[in-house]
Length: 487
Ligand code: NDP
Image (cartoon, rainbow, N blue to C red; front, side, top):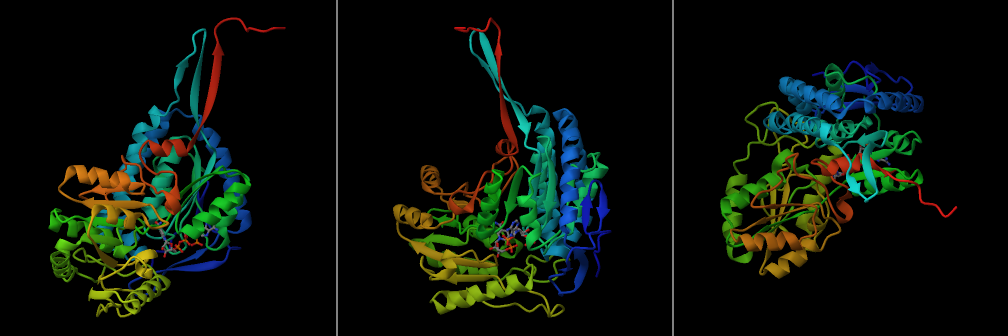
């Protein structure tokens, strides 16, 4: 099984190899086979990429927003035309079921390009009437932006970062996670086919110091990273040296609160989507499921029954619900957390181990796992697991659950299931989270800003909010009379 790209990088409109860079392999998570052999970008390749992006950015920014928007919308159309090919490649690289990648990965990327393609012509400043004079602001691009991706949503992250950046007239250098290097290259091909000038969107691969070199490069104006909290902190510290703009989309340990009046099947659907989709490798997952005591047993019984029906297996089979984890280290990390949960006294009601799929004995499969009797101080209730592991906690009162939900350093997302509309709004108002759902979970339409508070991040992706993060204001004062002067 091979998915070898033409070369490791896509720079200034062409595939480029960087033979001086360290080699690394991309593996198929189902079998552990090597699907592509890649090279990290050498320092000289990074310098050339930044120079190409700086030159191209000026040309791109000189176009009107309407012209830039047309390119983005054409690229969205091409993504939709090539959705199956992109989805199969994403499944190969991540192990996520095709059932998901066909609807949630490249498709969400296309939504994003369409959205920012649509509003590119409407990115503008404001006018202020000052009497005998006036002022206006212009929203100007920042320059060359670096996007750094995680392995859980490779093409979607590349689109969520590049579409607003490009709509605003910036250029982007995107570095995928070395675990999933492939689909960002396809996005670069698609942008070129859609008419994007060479050098406006570039992909460089790497691990270890490549991301750090990009962040530190003096030709870079902004960095947007999706990843873990320690990485976000390192990026922010490095960016501070050059006073660069940052957007950080980091980890979470989000609460999903189910009140006794909730429509229970919907609440269970939300909890399952928010813990098992993508094998649980989603930053906004509602991994602390708080269930009000009166309905706890009923909730657990139905949850176990529905979880037992999850079809785990070959991710290329469209009937499969759950594939393997992305990598061996992630697989071992998740099993370590499951062990810790047991040791600290949580009760496994289903799953709780690696899973065997007869035809793929080497795959990094973990059975969908539900822990009951979880308490706030347990490791599994405090740390991001990033696997198909749900922790169910119980509670008595609204006041108590809000305080416990907020007792975390994270603040990415939160969900509330209740039929009481006033309670729903009251509780989300009290929750410390950047993105909240009432009677739903993990839906992230492009029209809604996405991002976290506290240690879950800084800035917002998607919606008009992203425009603020990829532009800077220029204020212009215009005098209509004589200049008043005491001299
Ligand atoms: P990391 O945070 O380590 O990496 C994310 C990206 O940042 C990768 O492309 C990585 O490159 C890059 N990077 C790492 N260090 C630096 C640096 N100093 N400067 C610039 N770029 C850097 O995530 P992992 O992929 O290793 O996953 C580890 C954990 O992070 C997971 O177990 C999970 O808990 C969490 N995570 C959270 C995600 C989210 O959406 N919030 C997504 C994925 C993971 P490289 O890997 O090539 O070194």
